[in-house]
Image (cartoon, rainbow, N blue to C red):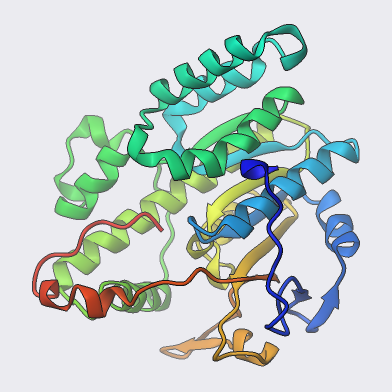
Length: 324
């Protein structure tokens, strides 16, 4: 288990630990959701990156699939496509039964160095490495899906048109065009940056967002074509699958036959205790976007300070690039 502990949702919120199918608002058991994903081609486990309950549930899903006889391939937003070889080399090397604990620790340290995960990212490593380690023990494929951090920053600062030809080769444009989705996402960018609004930056942020979605969707479809192992389990920030858009929509466009299951781990809020509070559709310029995910899996939320209150004096400065 992650960090050697079992996290127990607080019983105080009526939705904690419940799984709900959005289409008919029916509550499902874990057995129900496991049966649903068993026959899928792609399963999205949409997380809040620093929520430990989400990582615990992701591990449980991968373990259940494996113990049921599946050989899921695991994709990660947190690794870029160019890091796939390092991940594959680690998981394909000798298993735990053939190597000492000391050798395994050295292999983990080497992998972390290859992936560029410094000490400042200890919490993130502790969240994601247990799944990679489990994949190693069970000979599961692991792959990165995102763009490299450097090119994401360059797009946000300059826009795709200002990139060099070499940089543009790293970007796969799948041709997505949706003005209403652009409006919806740019509104979210403004909200996430405490109301800071600059048209040029918003356009660059949206270009970055689409380029990342295209990269993830292309990596998933490439893996679908490469392997018969099912399902592909995608560990991804929930924002990239919200409204059943983003990566979900792009995979559907690239591989229409793929059966996808979009699960969003949803932190509950004390101010919102009714299920209907979480299942609202959104209308933007005449287009209706569905509730965030096909399935909601409710979890506790982390206590957070209001970043807009804490950094109010910085609102006139350009915002930092956030990894959704």
